[in-house]
Length: 299
Picture 1 (cartoon, rainbow, N blue to C red):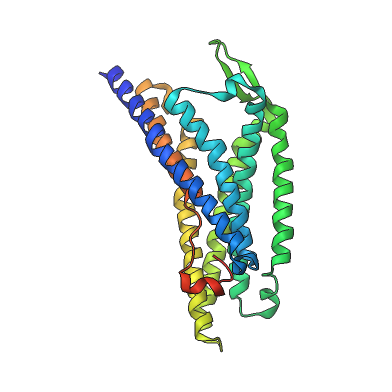
Picture 2: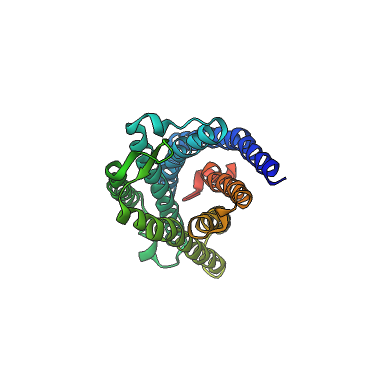
C-alpha cells in the first residue's frame, strides 16, 4: 500500500511541477517584463527613487524565475537536469540564481526604507529619499552580491555519486556550512523579513501622523495608499518565504525523511512551499491606481 501511495505522491509532484510551476513561470516573466516596461516608460517612475529599487527588483525577479523555477520544471516535471550535462551551466545557474535572489531581497528592503524616509516628518530624513542615492545603493548591491556569488563559480562542480549519477553540488564544506547556517536562514530570510516588516510599520505610523500635520489632502491620501501597499508587501513576503524555509530546514536537519513514504510526503510539501516561494517573485510588485501614478514617489 505504501508503495502505491509513494507512486501517487510522486505523480502529484510531477503534475504540480508541470502545470502549477509553469503557470507561475509564465505569469511571473510576463508580469516582470511588464513591470520593467512601466517603470522605464513613465517619467514619474524614472524620477522616483523607490520606483528605481522596484525596477531593479523586477529585473532580478525575472532572472530568479528563469534560472530557478525553469530548472525546477525541467527536472521535477520532465526529469531533465541541464546541470548534469554542462559544467558551465552547473556553475552559472547557481551563481546567477543566488545573485538575483539577494539583489531582489535587498531592493525590496531599500524600497521599504525609502518609503519610510519619504513619509518621515523630518526634512533631513526625507532628503535620503532621492534617485541619486538609489542609483548608488543599487549599484553597490549588484556589485556586492555578484562578488559574493563568484564563490559558487569556484566551488560548484559536477561530481559522480556512488550510484553513478552525475550531480552538480558544492564541493567546499566550509562554504556549504556558511550557506546552511548563515546565508539561507539569516541573510536570505531573517534580515530581509525583519527590515521590510519594521520599516513598513514605521512608514505606516508616519502616515497615521500625517493627519496631524499641515499636509495637502492629496499627499496625505497618496501616502496612505502607498504605505498600505508596502505593509501588505511585507506581510506577503513573510508568508511566502517563511514556510519554504521551515520545510527545507525540517528536511535538511531531521531524520523524518528516512521513511520512503514520509520522504515523499515531505517532498510534496516542499514543492508546494517552493511554488509559494516563487509566487512571491512572480507577483511581488503592485502598482498604484491610475489616478495616483503621476504623483507616486514609490510603489
